[in-house]
Image 1 (cartoon, protein in one colour):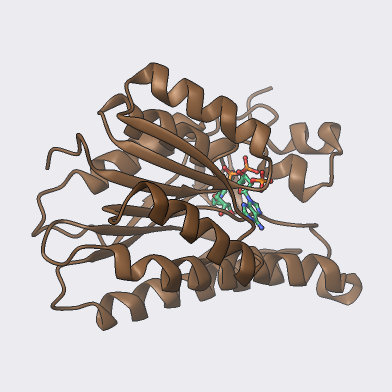
Image 2 (cartoon, rainbow, N blue to C red):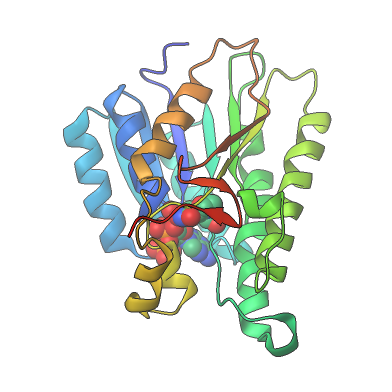
Length: 256
Ligand SMILES: NC(=O)c1ccc[n+]([C@@H]2O[C@H](COP(=O)([O-])OP(=O)(O)OC[C@H]3O[C@@H](n4cnc5c(N)ncnc54)[C@H](OP(=O)(O)O)[C@@H]3O)[C@@H](O)[C@H]2O)c1
């Protein structure tokens, strides 16, 4: 499917997968609408997307943890387009790696708000803008953490597993509309993910990727682009994408 001229909304587009997706969809001539809390960063991504070939690029403030912010974002979006062809629910991340015994409410709540409730809120707000029977896509960014739990990941793995259920339920609810619903579930990727998880402890974050060739934002963005550009009758329900060095969530090959 030719995506040129289609409207793509990407949440969490100020860094990582979302920023890479803005460039990837921009390169093929899409209009990209970018949401996140750090607007200056979004503006830089929007500029790069325009330079890459985007038909247009719109950086709008969005906090998916707040219904009123999602509503304000939707109003800005409606002012530039009546339709959305691709919605990428990407905003989210992990906060902390504490075992349940010492877990912190604010970390758990932040993860539920962004990865789980945020997907519901944004999808509810934008669904009326997705055309029926014209190849529209909802793509949720999950994680292999939603398939297999790990120590210290109870809340993050839980919300990503919950997000899989949202994807599956939504696909059932939208059956017959022609709107496709899928997820991309990455493994270890070097973005700002670990800096956020470890609250700015960059040395601890760097250790996550020590000796490994991880995924990069572009790897995941290319896969998203491939998924969205399948013909309208083809729905990629779920894609797991991992670095070759990561055979399983606990089995990572490290050099040196
Ligand atoms: N990196 C990995 O290893 C990995 C693996 C599997 C899945 N994932 C998932 O991939 C997605 C993207 O993560 P990433 O790796 O690209 O990390 P990242 O570089 O930290 O990007 C996260 C993005 O989400 C945005 N965000 C976070 N909370 C938000 C909120 N409340 N409202 C709006 N935007 C919010 C951030 O923007 P602002 O801070 O500017 O709002 C940022 O743009 C996340 O859902 C993450 O869970 C990551």
